[in-house]
Length: 340
Image 1 (cartoon, one colour):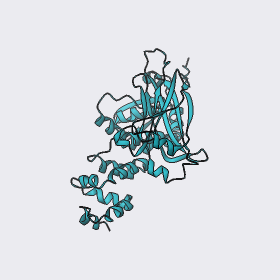
Image 2: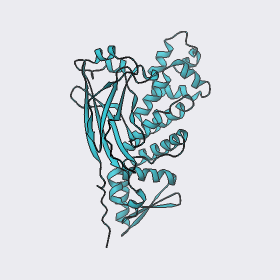
Image 3: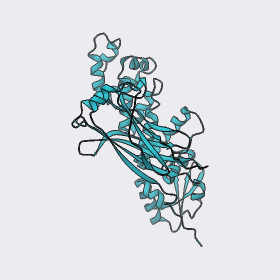
Image 4: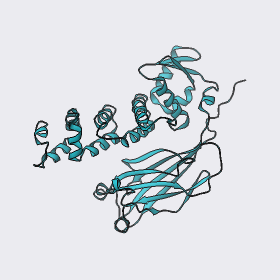
């Protein structure tokens, strides 16, 4: 007798909370850097949550930005299982619609970490120059989806009907689950079904087995596997997963990878990260790189070790170079002149 696979269990509990900041300008004047405004708690899953809004940033490095965070407000059930929530923050326009390019999301394992959020949610000057402040009112939507962890390997063993061969390793999975998450894999599965009777085997080239395993983890759990190595290894895996997400047209996974890589931009990584963002059409990651390079001393430091960066910036953000060219005392005048 075949085992019935219940993909709805344990199932997420999803709540949305619309954060409305009235009197934006007054709040900005009253709160210093690092001082939050706490909003009333709301319930999602087995725990109450509170939203903390920082009008002038949470830290000194985010003083020019609005920061937004969520934290537990007590009442969490005692459990030995890790409990995770997918959290997203999205800026809304005057009509209550999401503003493209102004959202952040990620997985919050709140059984281990008390808070989750975004230090650099939106630059204050950019917000104030936009049409998204309506009557001095700012609106941000927070969506929390809570789901208990479960054994992925056990789920994969229940009546799989397709096998993927990746780098010499075989992964037996469920076509209906993959098809629901990836239009590319859905099309490939449909094509293979017309060529072979019964269970089929699909070969995936140019991908590491551990990367495909992480893709499957996301497909089945809507979260990335926990990294047991350091931040550098996490960024390397995020690069691989971003390429895979673009290849399989998995936009949510792609956005998560962009956020991970955006948080790791530095003088040593920005050229590679910008190239990756351009190649795979990652607008949020591209903008984060350009913003990082907008500080002339930073661009100068990057150029000292990598001259390719000017060509990348010239192709993807010529306005940045024109702004820097306007400063006659800029030490990079000669290099900038070659870009025009």
